[in-house]
Length: 632
Image 1: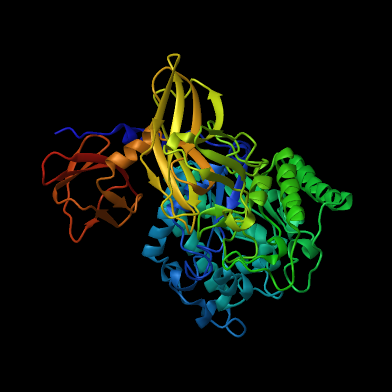
Image 2: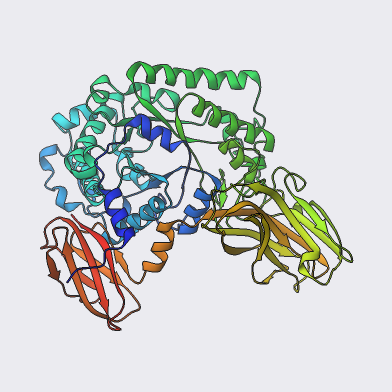
């Protein structure tokens, strides 16, 4: 019996197993402007320092224009078995180490969670950096090193049992990471370790880099050419990559060097009591950046190395704690200075041919870009990093209103309605940014008596495509309603299509959506909001649009069952609300392999590694889908 292989499955198969390599130069160009997802998976427990990661975070990162996410991840603590502190660091020699790499096993559930997050990110089309990072990493691994014990000595003749154990554990963790993700696309990039230079010398870091690069390459498949991010030891900030030896750089063709930049600390950490320089942007300030970045650029050019600015940032303006919206005890950067700092570093990095991922650690941190609590942004600094004054989409200009309510927006009012348009007061705005306020003092009895209109955009590229429009909105009264409407010029005629009635909250901004299929032969589109039926104050912000591609549509229609982890090694879990009648596994050469499901799990440990298609026949006899499965 032939299986129905969906078009999406074939696309996934082709894209996942393309043998075209992506060079470091090509990857840096693809990365462009990116952001860190900090304080989430690098916390001792996910949820300790920031809310657990959801797919909406990644959707919002993609929608505003970021191309890359760096995901700091901590694999230590109870996430990996094997306690190396049982070995004496001072008294015992390396010969007293009695363990082996099998003692150090990353928790399968945690690996599944990491895989889920990485899949979300890749499905959004984001370049995704898996960065080994975290406080427990430092406590259990990096902090254990002392000047008496060099990494270079350690690899040839370890001086303590503790050192031998730490070495084995770090290697074992990276081997499991490499094995789990070896079949993932080139858009997944590995970073060996975060900020090791505070504890490791340049020689020690050279040895560590060579060792982990070898582990990744020897795991095979995509890892044989995957881009790997490395840095040097002994010196931090812009000097860190300069410490990487020529032996390391010449050992592999797919390496990207990285550095972090938080200078000057008096400004970037000025929400702390010991730092109090709140203003940045003088010629001397900018000259310092030019000099430091120029050093990295000259070194990179001389070594033919590509550069990622992996972290940079300055504290929140006035030390604001966005989790409770209170000002810091010791002040912090001025708003304009914080934005200028981020803008200057971002533009400088891009101008020099670097990619970057700005540091963002959520609502509860002192460096906030994205506020998970209400899916809003600190828009001024976000736009500075993205190189924009205000966001715009193909069909919505000034979508975040940061250029003001009268820029690209206008209000059309028909009698008997009376209404006006202005920027909302700070207290009524969304996320401490600019928002639109429409004051309807006399209703018109119909929605279309007061119309908020964006630019009429001439384009033929969206004909026959499905678009999802959205906005955040609220009102001053609880009975207020509005509609989203799209005006098109189609075959020379004006067509109007509107959403159903959308009911507004009078307490907080809520997200509203309208899915619209663009008619064939459409040459112009205009985004509109109708809100004239009831008198009151209406507030709108953060308009957005996205194209619903074939892949997105297919995923939603095909998501009859979930299959994870994928790739898999030992067990496969199938989650579905449907009753299953039969499960069939098909190899790429067409061989059919009936399999049995027990407690939603399939034992695949005895199957040969490779690519398969898994199909499920449900008890209703008519639903049968195929998904690509990779067995390592």
